[in-house]
Length: 146
Image (cartoon, rainbow, N blue to C red; front, side, top):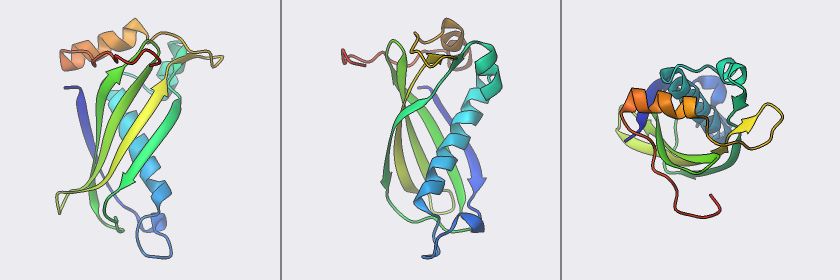
């Protein structure tokens, strides 16, 4: 399984008038974890561009389960669950560490593009980094559109 997790703490400025972390902050938590995951593979966002590709998000689905409050310690996971020719899907979870409860389930779909925004096949270099780090590749999607 291609799985990565990182930790962070919810901050006061992310809270809304109800006193819990605003829904939009969950997107930042997921982005943080994905960038950390790329770092595990030897890539920075600038490194992707130097390699001639980027990984823009094309779809996000979030299922909010329980609220998060300032000071909560969080575990944010990234699991690469499938890949197509140029796109892929990550399943992410935001977990309240001290309670061991899932605060949100997130599904992220992204596509690989060149620097002009045109979709390209998943780069072999990226897949090679995944293979080296996790000793496996993400499963291929069976859906013809993917």
